[in-house]
Image 1 (tube, rainbow, N blue to C red):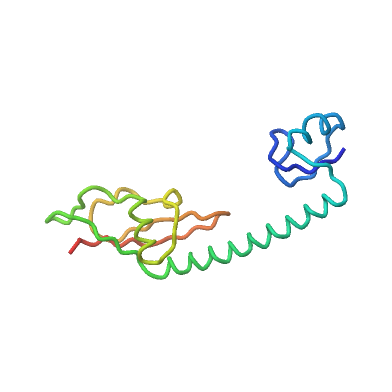
Image 2: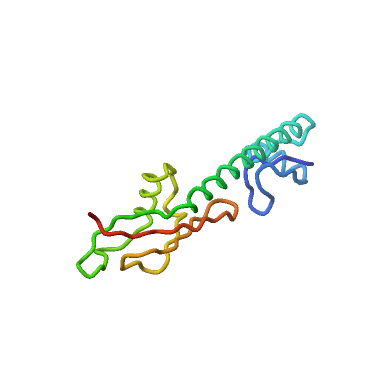
Length: 149
């Protein structure tokens, strides 16, 4: 029997896949547990529509990611930090600080876990950081660390 998976099922397949399983497994486990539905012509048509909508959403999201990457790469991100008289930074620069600066300067909400900072930044100057977006899209931004006024 062919079924369409509604959820990811270990050792069987991922969501929205059509898989062939034994009749008893489908009728007694997958369908009652709401892991799958029978692959009838109407269910296959619904699946096709869901996949079309999903691909359109992914294309729109990819276009937006590209525009965000272009905007972030064009100018350095300025961070005002507390420093001593010798130019050494008090404390350290964190991904939370970088995410907050991106939100304030560009208006984009970026998850701090997607930001990868270089080696420890202990002095004023320019540094490179990477932002890892979905599907292997990365942006390299320049961080300019300046002394607080």
